[in-house]
Image (cartoon, rainbow, N blue to C red; front, side, top):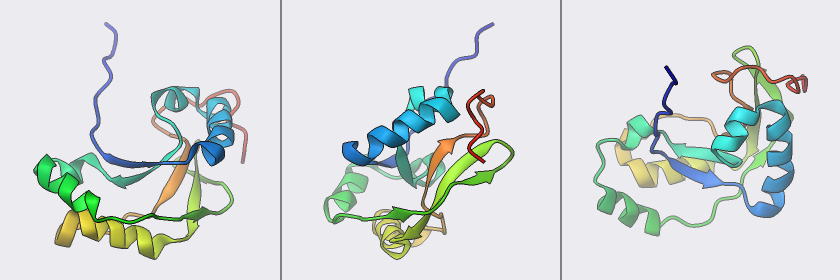
Length: 129
């Protein structure tokens, strides 16, 4: 029996196209499964954080949020064959944005770009580190 994909609703910050194209090309080599599912992004709020929030109120909160600039460091391996780029600048603004959206329910969540997700099979090209 084929496994069905689980729909995940989360707030996502997509990498601008100019920076995202080279990242997505790398992601297709490191983790073609994840690269086909979603473009290069930083998750602002996970599905469990927004599950009980009224969508209208959520989008009202988002209207007041300004631009965000993040910088990322060298690739790091995590959970076996996962690979991410950790945020090295802009995290305070990222956390402020999370507080604006989630209010007092915001908990620490470090911004990062996932290049290869460990839940997917390790790709033959996953040799970055």
